[in-house]
Length: 453
Image (cartoon, rainbow, N blue to C red; front, side, top):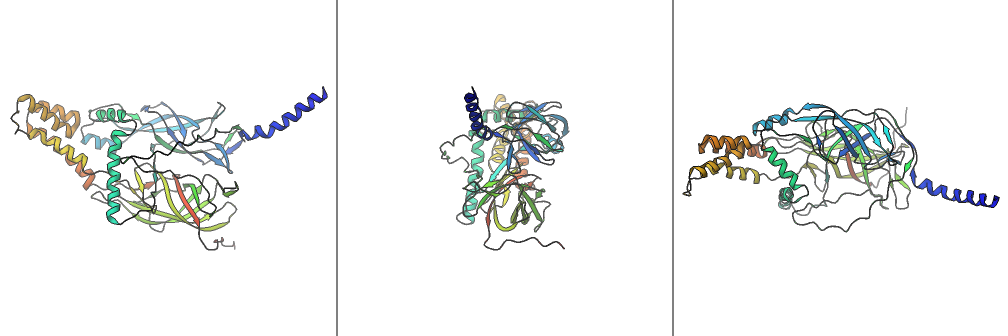
């Protein structure tokens, strides 16, 4: 009997280390920790609507994983704010929908074991789809090659509208957009960044499942984007791919050249021998190197910044050379091979040309088929180019080809103005924006902090 108990005890002791490896230990998420939450389904645009999202990035504390990526976060829409600028743009196109922006409040986290934890956070009203800009390899060629690559990128974006997943839903939303009034929704992929307002105690949890085995690399077709997400690695030669959050917002409109910037490392980096190389909580210090605000005639803003110092939590500081290789943004931002942020190239010809052709249809009376029915149909096409369904009804009811063509040319003129004359897109990165930086130590002695007087 005693022998059986001894064997059972020894068996339990041998299982203890294994069980400890199969879970994450308890920990506390400090107040002020940013949580990036995204929703995977469309939600109705109404106050009181339950919002169920997932973490875009894992949360580490003291170099330990506490909340894995895709952890479920729940909340609700607490208010709706009027989106005035979008309303004005929609009215000019015959859309009278009262567009609104949701204000969300997240209050619950669902853990891996099925339990829920209540946490406190502020509200967020700046939800938008997150675009991950990835810097391409070093560009080859001069100005002609760069312009060619920009044109190819714009064509790929146009083709993706008809080939990328979700094209049926995009077609439906396009039809909705032609109506004078249509329901509004919170689009899937909308993301918010909220900060915890109080510390959050988490119990031990089962370890997250291992990452799925990578599928064979798909060779992109001509019209598909060549984007390779950066991975978190630490090379033996001292080059790291660092995941960090910006400590303050940056903008091509408000930032100045030489402005000091700071980013906090949010995921620890380990060397190939599993030793900690860059701990979570280290800081990158740098400055804005180039900034140019958006200007008229479609000239977009330009923003570049780099980091020159990496400070570890133990106050050890070393000089580094960096290149921005990835960044999240609420707008379609592109990075060049040097890490400079600018707006993604867009096609400025296709949409104005199509609208101009549609606008000219009511004036086409040289085919010998200018019967009443044919002329009415051409009037409807011309009106639709300018004011959607409202323009179609006016074209059908008015009977005048010149009035229908005038409505159509109004739509073409709006398209030309927005793409060629209006101020270009500004470049902006909000506070707590996730950036990916390739960091290499310089061949110089680390900069030591000044001694305290």
